[in-house]
Image 1 (cartoon, rainbow, N blue to C red):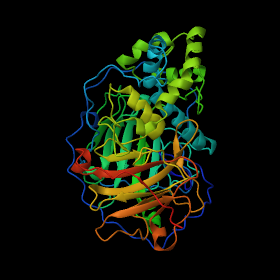
Image 2: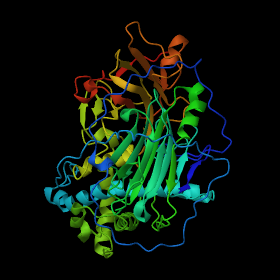
Image 3: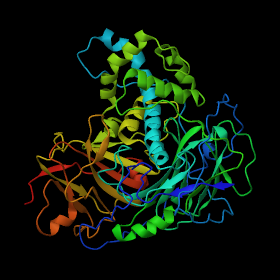
Length: 536
């Protein structure tokens, strides 16, 4: 067994990936000393997920030729903690089972006055784009992260890399990062064999290791929800037919290309060192017989033209089992080995800007909007064979999103009157007392770039979010909180409840990890964002 866990201080590989300088100083808390928040016990674990346990052997995918091997080396100074005692194997906290398959649905045409014939003419491209965009965004993120590691002389695939700093405004590789957790990330190529994940026991602190397939579905989640006991897991691809080692739980990915993303909660600036030690306890190993990963040749861009988009997606589909619904798109050059028809590529080039605009709203375009807050639909994080349109929106504006049972993401782009949120105004976000949250909550500020992705706002305060772990966040007498959103810092004591906003438009996202039943059944709703007087 070769241990290939690696910790690169200052290197972000995960949902919040950027590459700050190796000597970045630790962030200094903005307001006073750290106030620790109590963590409620997690809800009862969900029933076992078929995707997270040993499954009947699937037909082996076509054998792919191997190019020059990618070496598996340890980065100096990156020794990992010893794996936790795996006996007995812990329960797996799964993503919810996918509903029955339906045909992919696309969003309504962006232009309400466009002739019906024109809308129908683009319907086939819309369905194909909704299916393909999540694949493209996964491969784009993979390329960004893997290429950075390989440029440093380290192996990029089948290695687990930990970030030991919280995300900030320089974190631009993955859309919608959070400022609450450390991340450890691994891009897996399971065609050459399975990998072994060892997780430490972390009682009393939120953590999770989520396994996502090529299509962005969370096929298994282990961590706090399953009891936080730690354990050993064999992560296998669709073609693996071997026998797992004793006391090892099998997590099976339906695709060879997969993303493993580990989150460990940081309880404020003073807790960063402790959280770093814990995330270094997660390790990834491959067997000596594991075949070398096959390099990806197509290079994605942030906003691709048709030739780039099709090349990236077609290569990814060739590396993995092809879903049945994808076969309908072969005539649009969207299939492994599909001929490059100049006429079809021209259609794609003409349609791509409008198709991208239709999903540009991200998380706010999915689910149900109540009082200005958009609550995600039940399929988020595990769409299965349905609702490719919603999946595409989330891939562009929330890649790596967890299922609702693990985390709820509420998005606000407008105030109580329906006016867009903008730094030209001031707002108050009222958070009621006793929020139905089992792990932690946070309210984060984002601005949207030209491509539709969300990133932190770079303000002088360097405060990107407030939450239940924010130093000296002050509650009201009844236990509720009023968060003041405006560009300039309020005077006096209210500054501790300040969330800085940019001068232009912005988006707010409220995160609730391990949400309680009131969040999941819709009986709890956040009050609308209220426009208010600027606090001098």
